[in-house]
Amino acid sequence: MYSGQTVFSQLMQQLPWWRFQTLVDRYQGDYKVKTFTCAEHFRVMAFAQLTYRESLRDIEACLRAMEPKLYHMGIHSTVSRNNLSNANENRDWRIYAEFAQVLVQQARDLYSDDSTFPDLDATVYALDSSTIDLCMALFPWAHFRRTKSAVKMHTLLNLCGNIPEFILISEGKMHDVNVLDHIVPLPGAYYVMDRAYLDFARLYTLHLLKAYFVTRAKKNLQFRRRYSHPVDRTTGVVCDQTVILTGLHSKQNYPEVLRRIKYRDPEGRVLVFLTNDFSLPALTVAELYKGRWQIELFFKWVKQHLRIKAFFGTSANAVKTQIWIAVSVYLLIAIAKKRLKIEQPLYTILQILSVSVFEKMPLLQAFQEGECTIKGGDFCNQLQLFD
Image 1: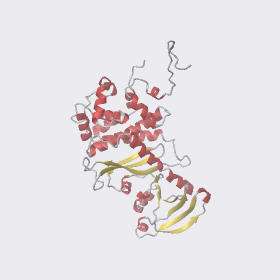
Image 2: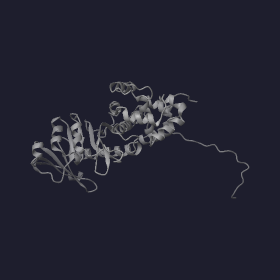
Image 3: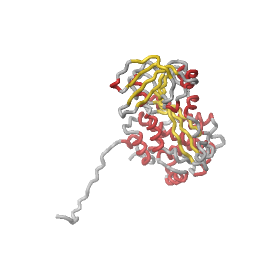
Image 4: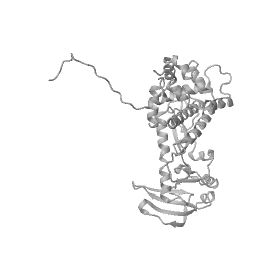
């Protein structure tokens, strides 16, 4: 019988703890802390994400029921609602945010060959945001509307492996386009966005930094056609044009030419794209925008399978801490899947981990599919109900 580490401990070993301790020292996370360090706080919050705990009471009850195993999970302190609440309120959320960035780099290296667009030798990003509704009475700092509070999770998703390389957590009232001011563009990369990010001054900044963008045009776009390129209408491409903006402000904010592509999808919807790349085929530009749907699936997956809708604290620090640890857990599962060559999807991996974190077995064994055979007994005295 295997008598080694628990599944949870083996999973935590996939993390670079020496980098985590460097961040703790940088922000003095363990300053004057005698028990329940930042590392233990991270482990407990990761346990809550993996096992679908909904409150501090749930976490306390489950871990105290398994108290003899906590030491082997790396938790050496007493887990209580008071300890967890104080840690969520007082431990600097930037520790967990920067640790997530360390995991982003590891995941990016592991998934560098899993390109959604194998014929395109460039990095493709999808940019979007998701709103997390909050109660105004409990979260008055998260301004959104007059009757409700919310935070926004602005995410830049690398479509090569669906790795969130940049996340900004803001108040709900922050407009999506403002996140472009916080992104450092990668020269040669493609940034795919919807119409909410159509700001020509910011798009021109991307252009000057040698990055490409693909977005949708608004209906009231003012432009003048300079040239029409030949297209194959059987592919759904209606027109491929070189245009110059003629609006009062738009022509000042973006003084150079743009490429305008009109595309009719198989369902009959007409979409108009704007891009500063004149080398790609028009159909490839349409496929790039179609790939933006991956970030919608990412938000759906995170909201359904991680705990970022019910929060364990009401302060901004507690909310950001929980979201960043949830992102770290997502990245940890993605890293373990690639390193251990697990074939199951992330959803299945998370479901298996949720019921096996306290088991003492090799980590890979938990994901092996085997047939379970129940040996029947000899019921010689069993009477027959039917002849």
